[in-house]
Length: 287
Image (cartoon, rainbow, N blue to C red; front, side):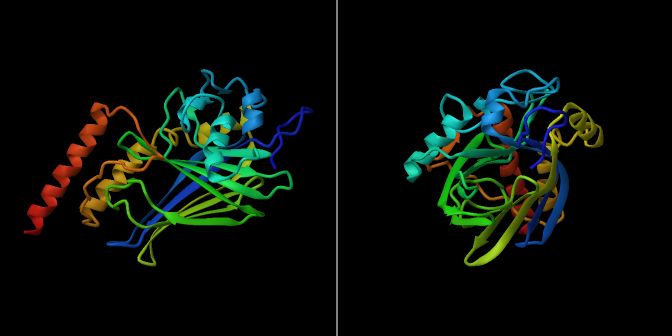
C-alpha cells in the first residue's frame, strides 16, 4: 500500500495515474486508451479527514474533492450508504474495510462514468463490490455485487440492466473483475452477448501517496484529464457514427429499481434529440 510521506500514520488512500482502455468488437472494431486521474480511497480515512490537505478535501471546497452526495442513494456518510446497499444482498456484517475507486471533483466539476466500492473482511478477502455506473442522460445505476470471501482476483458475471452507450442496447451479460488494489490497481469490465464478448474495458495504474506535491505533479502532467471525460465520450461516439458507421439505438426508459433518474435538464434532452437525428441520418443514407 502507498504511504503518505512524513512521520504521520500510514494511510491506504492514494492517487492513481491510471490508464483507461476500451475495445469494441462488434459491429465494427473500435478501440482507444486515455490517461485518467483516479483516486483509491479508504472510506474510514476519507470520512475522518485523514486525507484532507490544501488541495484535496472530503465534503469540502478544494481543488480536488469527494462529496458523499455524489454517490449511491439516500443521505448519510459513504460507509453508511454502502452498507445500506449490501444488507438486502445478505451482507449484514459491515465490511472491515471499504476502498472507493473513483475520479474526484475538479473545481467542483465531476462526471464519473463508473465508481467501485471494494469491500473487504478483516483477513483481506473481498466480500463485495458496489459498482455505480453513470450514463450521459442523467441516470445512475447501482450493481451491488457480493461473493463468498476470497482473495483477489475476484470476478462476477451478471445481467446488464442499464442503458449506458447509445451504441449498445441494455441487453447482455457483464463481467466485472477486480484483479488488484492497494499497491496496484486493476479492474476490468467486459460485456458479452449470446456467449460472445462484444466489449472490453480496463482501468489500471500504480498508486502514489495522496499528498499535495503528488497532486500538483499529476495535474501538471495531466492538466485536463478530469475535464475531458465527457468530451472524449462524445468524440468517440462521433467516431463510431461517422467512421465505424454504427447506428445509435433508441434509449429505453429505466425499469430497474436500482436505476436512479435525476432531473432531466436541457443538455440530457439535447443528447436524446441528437441521437434521434443521427438514427434518421443513417436510415436515409442506407436507403
